[in-house]
Length: 157
View 1 (tube, rainbow, N blue to C red):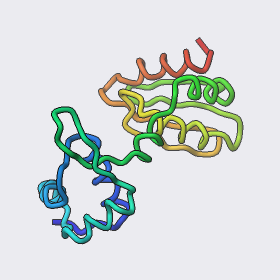
View 2: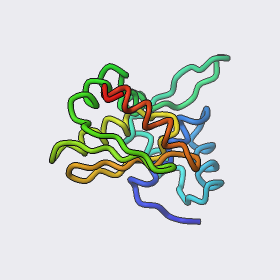
View 3: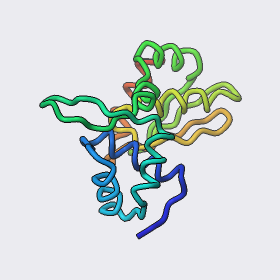
């Protein structure tokens, strides 16, 4: 079992809370252990507090942890994405499961951040340089669909 640093552990906890209902700290410790992450109940308690997790009532009446800030931060409205892509993306290219976006110098990180928060289906992650952004897409030819979607949002197609 691995002992992760705080940022990695926070990321795993946030993902677990997004994916399924977690009703107790003990349950979260078990879920982390099942994913190969060593953490004590005290550590998990502190992590939940630092993440701003709160208990909410879910359908069926049970209580579960949620991170309101994380959910807000991850959801970028399509209008915002359209505006940012339209303003900064000058070219979209695709090769199998890789999409490459070109921007003016110094702008790739803006697009990368917006795309990361948009949580687009089929996008596994982004890497931004100065004027180039690479998106890794799921599937061997998943880039075609994502490239078409981004081109459309940027007003290039």
